[in-house]
Length: 280
Length: 351
Image (cartoon, rainbow over all chains, first blue to last red; front, top):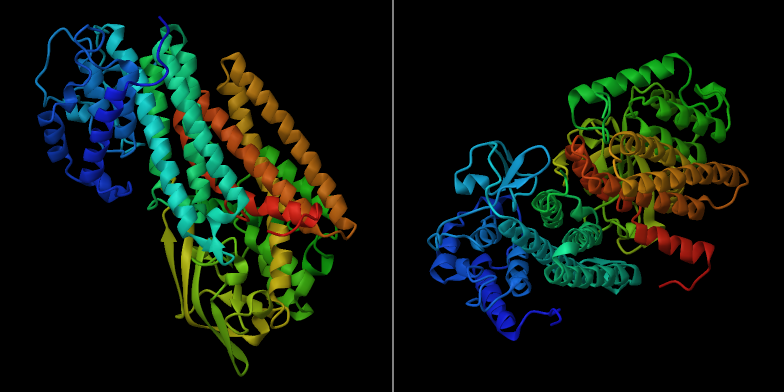
């Protein structure tokens, strides 16, 4: 049986509904210091009540409607908004779990960075330890030593879904870049009318599509996961960098959106590498 | 990275600024400032190639970056090319010995790549001008003494024709500055708000309405060898760390070697550019090649460092990756540089 390269129609429809919900709750506001400082717990409650946190519970069993590839759609939709909640981490932690935690419980997966245990959103799940919030959308707690008592399952799921989240972030960065290129005028016309800018946006789009393909590859071939996800993340990184470029001088300011997507992709890469055990 | 290493100078830290001022005074005291300037102005009458070689050697030795880059690399060419002897006598010694720090007031919110859209106006009243408007991305503005200001002296719609360049005194009531926070968290550039800022006639560089031509001299310098030397220094620093400390796997070593080769070619490109400029050719196109090349190499190097996932330097590399985004935007975006190359060198039809 050959592996699917695209998610099912069911998954597409469900993910579209999920994306609508997220758009409604974030009002498509751009990431900023104020955005990250918002109280996001009402959204978490809504996700739990709506059953969205249970998405990965049937993974790998005959009961499940959704496989890994299907779940990447949800992770992508999630990543586009950079909401600082452990959604991806919770569904990954739940997948393949022997016990079934209640729907509203925030969970995460500890990954070994080679020097320390990292827990994404550690603060949200009761971990003590210094927090690295280089990416406000993906804060990492350096947690206390522990036995690696989880099976590899949740970590592999985390790696794939964090990568899909990064694809979502890169995709959102592209959307904002397109909007900027349409609105910003120099030389009496929108900068998006210049070939140099158009071609860069085209390249960004192409890279994001390739990143999606790489994620599909990673779902189909567990042995190639490190290569596939590495490729995907590098493609996302290049695109997120380009979002800064398209925004020009503004793109290099703290207040503007692009660097938050770039930081997210960089932090996601660190989590994914640790989840795959690449840094020993 | 060694304790003295900095990914890029932290321009808003007081102790860092003090160190750089100190270094600049030491270089001046030893007689090495501005080697290519005429002796009567404090230089040694050497050629630009000698000046570059000195800068390159300093870079290899890891000296602090000077605070005087706008004064020495941008204002000085403007004064040599378009200023009066009296202006050179007034401004250059204080640029040379570092007692006057300059900033550059060109970009505005509505005039970035399209510099001819500048709206800051300098209105003439008798023997002085009064300038009103807003400048953006002004490095060094927070502690500069002078601003190399591009302002409109002609009609509002006069584009390239109605511009003039001034040496604006920063310490006056009509000049306010406000730092801008960058994606790396620092505030190394600023907004400058001008509200009836006073400029004496003596401080206009070049004729009224000649500003675009003076600006082109300045932009050529900004994209040229002087800045190339600064870029080389930063590239060498990064490459050294990548190669000796962060390249555990064959992949990274290959990348580091490739970057090293590109760096050496870049150095030769700078030297050839200097020699070509000396023949009186239009410096802008060759400067554009330099700028595109060093800025993109700098980003590739930062990215290689980040992707190396070096456990020891991960924190520095990720900041370096963010810092490196500026290189292809500031001093003329890569998009504009390529257009200059296409239009001026290749003679392609204008967009």
